[in-house]
Amino acid sequence: MQDGTKAFLYRMLETASPSGFETEAARVWRAEAETFADEVEVDSNGNSYARLKGDGPRVMIEGHIDEIGVMITHIDDDGFLWFSGIGGWDDQVLVGQRIRIIGTHETVVGIIGKKPIHQMQPEDRNKVSKMHTLWIDIGVSNAEEARELVEIGDPGVVEQPLVEFGDDLIVCRGLDNRVGAFVALEALRKLAEGERPAADVWAVAAVQEEVGLFGARTSAYHLEPDVAIAIDVTHATDHPEANVRGLGKIKVGGGPSFARGNAIHPGVFAGLVAAAKAENIPYSVESAPVRSGTDADSITRERAGIPTGLVSIPNRYMHSPSELVSLTDLDRCAGVIAAYTRRLDAEPDFRRH
Image (tube, rainbow, N blue to C red; front, side, top):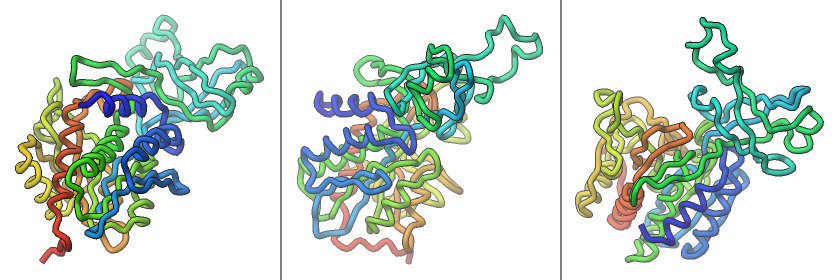
């Protein structure tokens, strides 16, 4: 991955973008898009768009830019903050974490506390921690001091720095799915820098996937594309205790994973596979018999039905403060999407004859 491209990715990953509060990350995404796209815009929901103008079919390349987070629900008399989750958490991973609160007045760092094991009854020591028993300590003495820094409804994210494992692997919170929004824009960049396609191509950084696939729904309705590619992370199964029989063999560094199933148009799936083979890009295939759990589920059912494919990035330790992906996989995902887009006919027929 080129240094400039990596710098863009890292800038975006440094921001906080919990669902419903994606503005900071989206600004970074749009600023990068403005360096090469024909048009860049943002809508009232917060979805960001970058366009390469063309006269051919309209293509939507979408990745959601939000991450899971927390929201302050109560400030008690002693200044401790109580909170709920934004999106789906494994409550146990929150214990002891530092939290970056995007406060109404300023950004504040706190720590998540719980009763120490030394003070627990023996029967409680093996119980799983629950979010409603945890609190955030921001180092104040009372509610008045706390309210000078934060307010009810302020969001937050786990405060964890990005770490590089060698030259190719990165570890960070919220890779799900800022890396998908990154790949969407990188696919557009590849199309802009190489032979431009006939297609009218829109990259989308959608919001609020983690709380209901909302941004993808409204952006797909707005664009009404002829075909769409959703990008998300998927569970890598190359670690101990992985459910290979249920999820298949999906390896970090093994290239994109293409989904097959209810929300996936078979013609788009076949086109992605053909593009990967033509470009010598390794890939895996995963099943999604009922739903994929991604924005593809929302996009495919918009308007009269939008032919949709799903390209996924293998990810270890999803929805934890330390998710892990391969930079090479990100580049391969962008490459196969660009190749697929270039191979589209001027008037593609996605009817299921």
